[in-house]
Image (tube, rainbow, N blue to C red; front, side, top):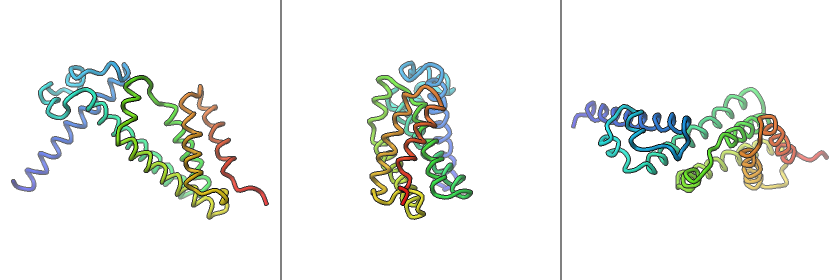
Length: 193
């Protein structure tokens, strides 16, 4: 098969997959996870049900693929925050911005039985490992700069941050999220000599 033909087919498959996942995103935003059906996904994406089933065998698999895309987008957003703030400020400012963004993302979660299923997949474990390493590196940078405490291992502090800020999911407002981030950052600051 010629290379151009192969690339064209791959691009078509990717655009169909993206249309399917975009339809799932719209449906979940409108009605929640539990209301998504294969029929609605096919109709919303503008493809036939037979084509949809060629890409995904059931609603669970399409929701997992959508969730994986969401998780990747969240991780990419955190990296972009670090790059934007890190260029202008120091490691402490970059960490504060990343933790604030993480807490705000945690607050926007979805609940219920489908959410529990989606958060058990291997893509979630990979994302947690990537997130933990990302925050660990930010903490280590801050400790080397003298902004953050150096008496606790950066990996332990990363775990602390992620668990503490996971509580943002149940907070009532952005102001409450900011307060939780500030409390977390206070615990990370280097103790005064």
